[in-house]
Image (tube, rainbow, N blue to C red):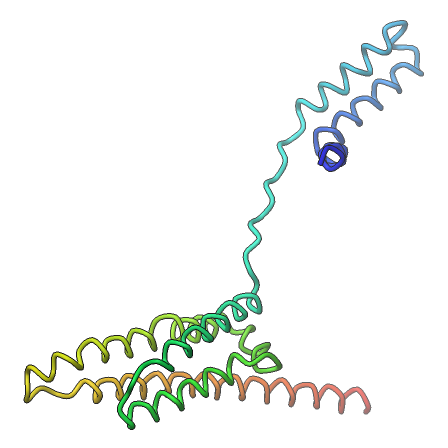
Length: 200
């Protein structure tokens, strides 16, 4: 740790500015200007250079990259599927939920799809929101309200709301998958044109 502090100071702006001042002091010594007080002149110019040096720039924050974010969403998706496995849903809602989770799993699967998704911050946000917020909230709302509808007959069944919510989420995920497919197709076409032009 002490070694890293020493190396950090050696590379710092203060040391570099001080070293420049010290070299100027040595030049004054060799030209005869500093006289017998040359050690004081060299040390003084080093200290003055170190004092007037601009402050060090703080290091930028190290935020996780898109692939790391997707790795975190993938872990949360595992928790979500564990939660959903313990929820009893009507057949229509269960079918829609299965289609949605299958699509989300395909988007999060490591490989070229996840790499393409990582290039789209809005897409990463949409998948993250679906996994961490939209799907669990929709299912939890159904579980909570299902019991109350037994006490209030004549209201719209909560499974209908759940099916509509899951349908909207599936449509959004399908749109994202289609956009990724189109972007990958355009990238492939562009590379094909590049190779063909290069060979002409």
